[in-house]
Image 1 (cartoon, rainbow, N blue to C red):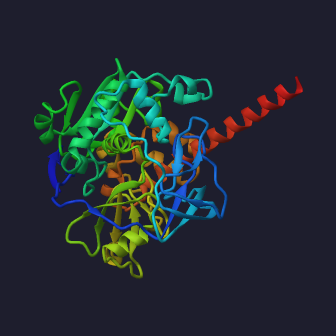
Image 2: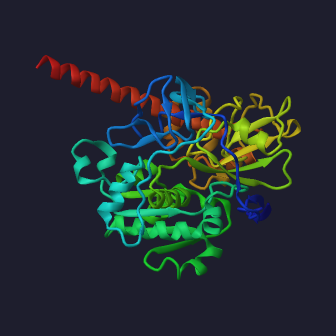
Image 3: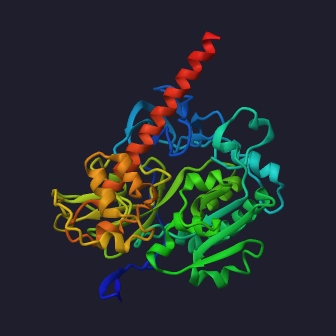
Length: 444
């Protein structure tokens, strides 16, 4: 980390570091847990029961739009019940116990993505259970809401969200041919929509000849330049933009990993079962990126890498700036998990309720100019609306405010609590309105 002097203050400059090393493929675990809910999607409805014997790639649950959860192991459904997200929310999940022999569902491959037409690609993605922004005509009459919004621009981000993580960048180095072919398929499905591929600046020149029909946006190694929300805002020509607001405006965000996985699954004719995860921290000289089955317990990955978690150590899902502490090492790897970080006991900070000292450093470093100190104090005492008025709604959760706070206040966590409370209130209000509307309709 370097520093630069600005108006007499030392302002941290955090850069996205780079490291070498191949992706390590881990053997399948003996047990997986698969969540039945994803951010921004309807819950999945189970299509199997406890005790069912399933094959790898078999549909376990699906939404009305046929987005699906697939078995990532061959084995038995041992439970369908509560599962907890990294931020502590209770959702439903399915647990599988592996059989001795792996058996896959029948494959239906697409031979050449570049020669396929849009309808073939769109139908293929739906058949494989992907949450695609493009829907076949025969399905459009059965779905509603955000899934039917038009697509005017597509942003494919091949950059990682935090320093020390190498998942999206690994797609550019280890899986480039799959990625390039998959981007061509996206271009076919997107039709007239603009396709922007966001890459580290050092990759921009060499990729220009491989991706001739898309716009390449290069970003610097400065951490905040790699923020996905700010990149979406830059593409849309506004100051700050949430992923949901971007979708409502016709802008779709896809990660390089998801795009490459979709293309590879189309070519194989099998659903996605794997995830790349960067593991770093205690016991590792440098980070390691592994490929593992979706639903793999965190503890299994650490065990395979020879890492032990002792008393006082902490495990984060994510990196040091944005990660969530995870105390259950049986919690699963999901499609949103890009990193696991292990902190040794001496590195763990135990926060106390220190008051704000009004130094203003959090507001100075905030890339979206929120009154962080004020918003966090409101959130601390449950004043959610006041926190929103002070700018909590614009938080991009970069973690820089907590990084520079001399009072060591958990500022990011306060902001997250306000955002979460507001989202829960809006969901509850929407549910109440739906119940009232349903009651009125039944009376008529």
